[in-house]
Length: 418
Image (cartoon, rainbow, N blue to C red; front, top):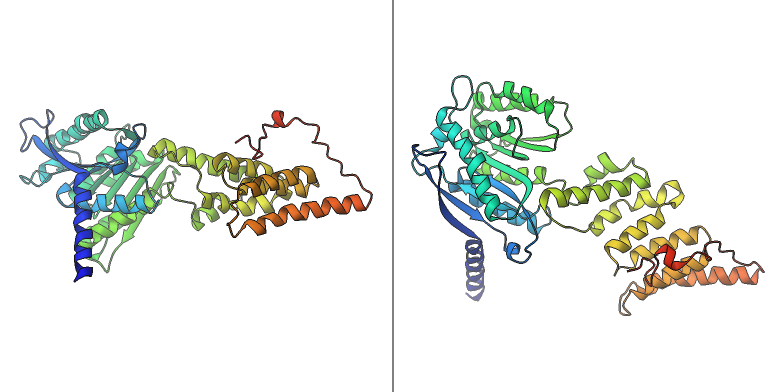
């Protein structure tokens, strides 16, 4: 009974916390004036961290069919952020099923162009809603739009405009317009910035619709534009309802792959053949792009540093060990790892005095009860033994760099001026 009460209490707290970060508001649209429903209900989720840092900005997600898509998207947003697989986002859902307005919101004519009413809904999002959100919340440049069936098809009209305002498009079981392929052919090859596109289908959609989606997939697959990053899922063993949750989760993994730590696939495809200098540049650029696009001021993750370790150690005789160590010291001045790599660099070059200096710097950062302390101190002992051996052999250690000023090198007690 106690366990049951504890579980119920946890669920209650989770619901309360979720509710505290979500509010609804009614937006009176001038663009929709005179239409079926010019007053739209918005549901807005703001992460808890929003109040804690007044300088941080957040990606924006516009979710159509908010009555049921909003909660699914927000749940995935929280889960992926918690697991460090995606940035936290501000999510804005638009209710479209109050007066069955989704049909007029997203209607197309026989030429697969937006109708008068759907053009107004388009302008409402582009000219009013996004401005409203940007005026009231701290938004990063990265924006996503999410839709299901006809609202998914509608989202594509933002993609094919002259200057797309969204960076990512989530098409869940899209009910594509007849000539959507022609619109894609005219736009996707010319995209000049990273654009993420997700779509899914399954035999639950029926043979005709499934075939249409598959045809569009093959079209997208054949576009040769590295800025266009697409993913297609076929959930043949699913249902139309359950596929919605599957699609949102899979779309997250695709769209925010860049944000995540370096995967084996990313390493094998993008990094493995790089030189040490190129590998360091790649990882630094990755995090600059993360900060710019998503507003997440992340330090380079330690696991990503270690992902390129083999390249630094094994290529070009370890000549980039010093630069690698300095980068780590800038990011993690409290860690002994940076000093270890710099020490290894100097030890490999037989500059034992400097190697000893950096190994000692690193050892000083390790607490006495750290189980790795003895292992790390072996670096100090090894260099001392080498120095002793040289002296016993009557050889003076030549250290051509000793005459350089520590101040000129920017070296402090950690070897990095930190």
